[in-house]
Image (cartoon, rainbow, N blue to C red):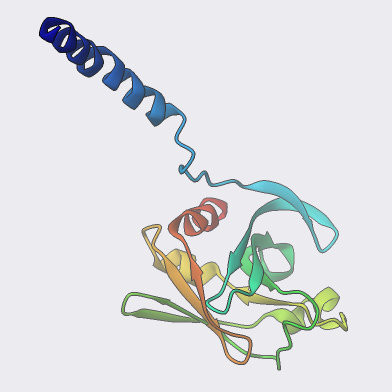
Length: 166
């Protein structure tokens, strides 16, 4: 009986365990993949990174990064809330932090006629170009927008998408 148990352990440890590990590496459900897709922005079809994230108050925001023909093909970040969630006195800069580093992204909303004339005031745009040029790693970021949300965590895979578009 002991020999059979030893044989089963050997088979399990030498055959099945490595097989299980190998299969789990290929089909890992926790793996996050960055996706850049063609999306319509301001009536034009362009490459964008679009993600829905929650702030620390559990409000959901959509972050869309794209190269804007309105701003000399600079990378722009559009923050979209649902009508009633996002009311901003423009211009209001977006504060971005990562560790001890801080950036303030310039509010470009009023330069986009479609957003400036939208009575819902459910979106705002910011110049993301300088931030992406100044970071060399896909680091986590924290966004804050005065009077709207105090902290919106942005995971590294989203920053990777932004850098890929730039």
